[in-house]
Image (cartoon, rainbow, N blue to C red; front, side):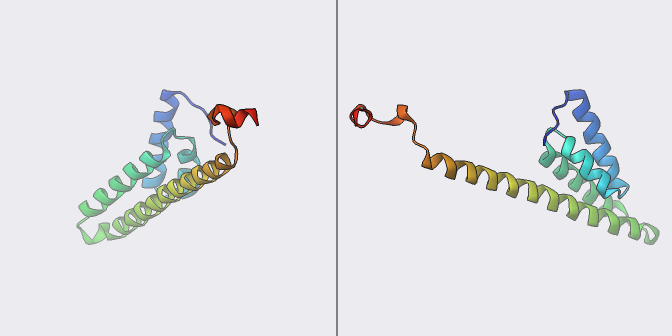
Length: 114
């Protein structure tokens, strides 16, 4: 179930989602992502930010953090892909149901008289 929120709340949920991804709080990230108005866009931005930060971690001490960020980037892309797939499946089911239902307005005048 989607929660309708204001633009201010959406920005807040996006920032909290990013924070949760960066600090490896995946269940919390999922919670905030479901509250975003554009969850797919937010997930893709978070993924790119994680990848960029992981590339900047050059020192050996930062390699563990870089590995976590890369894993989080892959996870977020996986979540975004699942959302796109779920949306596409819902759209296909909706189209399939509408195909069996014929509107009276779409029938020709000769067919309506039958």
